[in-house]
Structure formats: structure tokens, C-alpha cells
Amino acid sequence: MSAPASTSTTAAPRDLDGLKGVLAARLPARAAAAVADYEAFAGQAPPDDAKGFAAHHAACKAALAHVEAAVKLLRWAAPPEPAATAPDPEADDLARLIAEARAALSEDSDPHDHPTARPDPFAADDAGEDDTDEEDDA
Picture 1 (cartoon, helix red, strand yellow):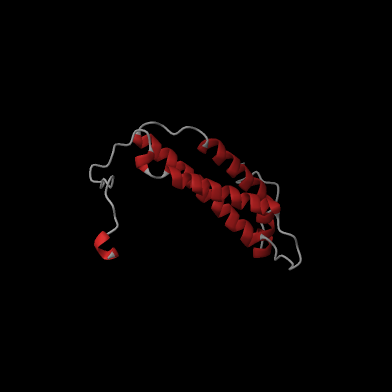
Picture 2 (cartoon, one colour):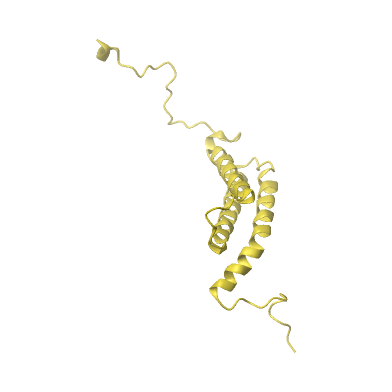
């Protein structure tokens, strides 16, 4: 006798509304766990070598994409809100966390800012140059 394919005790939803209900019930806790895992991982110092740094950065971006997908599914699965309901502070917190994480990643995304990065030999050195044209002022 073979083992069942799934160990879940709940039956699979039979229609779209059933799927939405299941997702609306399960995803908030899972999305929160994904955010907590992301924060723990992103809080670790990235490796010093360029390959390790790139891999750490890619893993952070993948984790954010996972959280973003969960948030999109949550919005899709959520029942329509009545016009007079108060905003959900948990949804605002999740959106804020995602925005903060994206901002942190964008700050780290410039490889020239990494401690092991080498200066760009082709970058223009604008030190001491004045962009204003004094002849046009007359």
C-alpha cells in the first residue's frame, strides 16, 4: 500500500472562491515568516569576495520577490473591502517592510560601493571642474 501524496488534512479547494479562501487564511502567516527570514538573512554581513557578494545580493532579491508574490496573492485572494472599513495596519507594515528592503538592496546594488570593489578606471574625474559656462552669463 502506498503512502498518500499529501499529508494535509484539509481537502483541496474545488473552485476559485475556495482557493481564494484557503490562500487568504494561510498566506498572512507564511508571508510574515518569509519577511522575518528575509530580515534575518539580509542582516548578515555579505561575503567579502565579489562572487559571494553577488550571490548574497541575488538571494536577497529572490527572497523579496517571494514576499512580493505572496502579497500579490493575498491581495487577489482577499474578499472585497467594504468602502467604510479602516485600513489594515498589518498590510501597511508588510508593504513598508518590502519598501524598506528594496531601498536597502538598491543602496547595496552598486558594486563600486562594496569594500572589495576596485575604482573604475574609465570614470570621469570631475574634481575641480566647473559645469557653468561664464561666457553665457554675459
